[in-house]
Image (cartoon, rainbow, N blue to C red):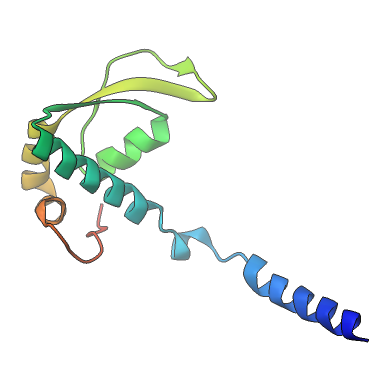
Length: 121
C-alpha cells in the first residue's frame, strides 16, 4: 500500500539523519566558539571596549586558554544551572598573548572576511 511505502521510506530517511559520527572527527564546536569570539572581538574594537566580563563553566575557560585567550577567574565557583565562575578578559592582554603564541588566530580575528579559523591549539 502507499502508506507502507511512505512509512518505509521515512524509516530509511530517518536512519540517515540520526546516524551519529564520532565527535572528534566531526565537531564544529571550536569553529563556532572562535567565530563567536571573533564577532565579539570585532564589535568590541569598533565600540572601544577594553574588557570582557563573562560567566563560564570550567571547560569553556580551559578551551579558551588552549587557544591562548586568557581570562582571569574573579569569583568562586557557584552552581547556576551547573558550575560557573565569573571571568574577566582584558582585550589588549589577549591581543598581546595571541600575537606571541597564536598570531594566525589574531590575524584571522582582525580580518573583515576570511576562511575557517586556524584550529591549532
